[in-house]
Length: 89
Image (tube, rainbow, N blue to C red; front, side, top):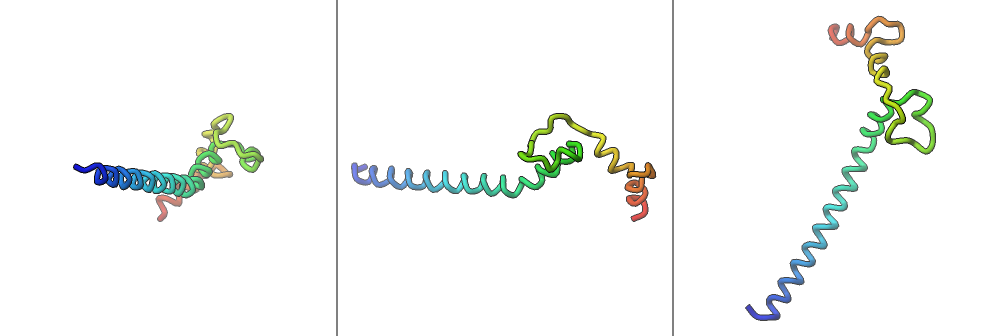
């Protein structure tokens, strides 16, 4: 293989590597942009109500309040309306 042919092939490989890096960086940023609302919903569901809108937002809560899920299932009046609606539909 001649020197010029090998040099040209190395240049093409380097260019394709740079393009691949930019494509992967774009895809990772797009995935983070798309997943951010879902991550916000999950972390906000584990916080007390007064911590959700505090600035700056804490992506990792100080404490995990799993009782928020129980309160959502049980309802405010304790009637388990969520469970009743599941069986009603």
